Image 1 (cartoon, rainbow over the protein chains, first blue to last red):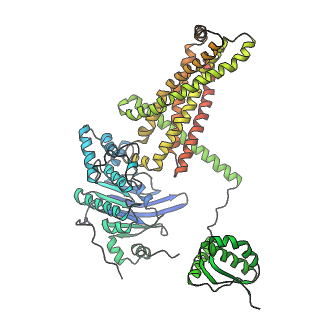
Image 2: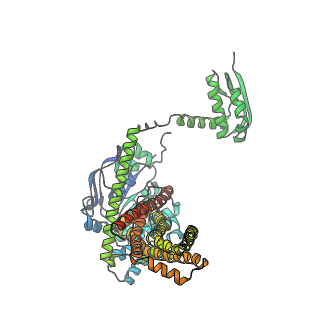
Image 3: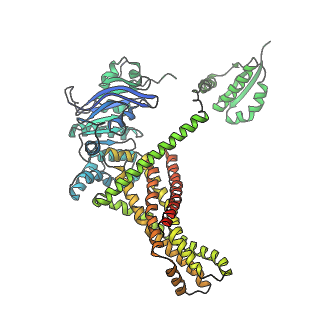
Length: 268
Length: 358
């Protein structure tokens, strides 16, 4: 029996198929020595959607995210982000492109010697000529937006894992980028905190029109936030599914996709 | 003929397995069956005992496990499944032959040297840019590192310098006395400390205190993805992390050397005054026999030593692998690399100064 499809995405309606692509991956292949992690991965992320890259452990989804944010170069393939060639961009052009999107890392990656406010101020002070008062105002507002308005002067070591991730989202949003990449936002969080983070993502997507590219394997989060997914598979060394996760859950005939969405354990 | 039965009873847990292991293995050396009908409880250790006995008995033509109740049978079945999986480990990759291992080692060394040269180039470029455009420098970070590497090291530098001057003076005063040349102990200590030992010891202390701290701090940032975060924010990790530390070390080293020199002279003076020489005589001796070149040469070496110690610390930190152990390895490697580089550079400076007539 197909499980009931949960109410998805709050009161938000994702973009239609005609929305312009904001991220494009074409023929992406990644090898480490003789080990092929994935090959020929091709997809579009449409403007305004919450796009999830999912798959089991070791399938290469975090590696794919590293390619999309410019931390690694693919062995083969092309990546276009916000209309620009990410792989070909060099020097100042590359720095400008990097400033146009935000990234939240799996562990938050807040700078441990800085308070939350200083963490959020950093990109504003580094890349804008805003007066100090404006920088402070914006940084406080970003932290308030993620529910950390009363923790601005705390160090990352003084707050919980969920708060670290919220602060990391606030820092990633400091320059109001139209595109945010999140690596495993729910990993290591309790279900309530995780659900709160999902709601935050939906709110930001709905109210600010931010496009999200999220790497996760948390089924509840995927079904709650995702407009579209691509699924990578370790055995296939590539992409095995693309589409609306609720539709895939109900209709996919691909055994790995069905096993993932219906939480069927791999045969021991 | 029916197989002899080896009966077990009661709780088959870790304590029972420990107690029964040797006796069971001896008893299972023949064609026996293992009777578990009286076993009330079995854990992982008990299951291991049963499976080991089963294998041993099977080799002698026995080994049937009989009479296990539901829970006991389930634990043994699970353990058997695990043992079967563990008995088929993935093939171990073949070990490299000696020539291949040497080749790989040489390649890794050359690759590492290439990385170091690339890092040196990037560091020189970034430091030069910051010096030429000081408004791009992160001054608060630099001041913080200068305070940690410099101000907080001053008591240690002063104490070691004083003791070093004192020990050197004592040790040299004994043979010098035989020739009535005790007054020249002042020259010996001053010249050796100003030219060689002051810069060298200060740099070793910098490598031990700050080089390792730089490597550990940057290494931890690498492990925590903070450097990746800087990169994806469009911030240059070199400008953000390496330049403030290198400039702090370069600026602070002459100060550390000056304090080391003064402390060593104070230590030497303590010994000399105890031998009956006046401070005026000691001072005249030092001033008359040391040149500005001795002092300036030592301080100039310090600038280079500071850059090298901080550069190696930062480079090791930036190259940290994954996990806490990698951070420790980076810190150790920063200290060892820093000290070795300082000594090698000091030798090069000695030759250069000799050729320049200093």
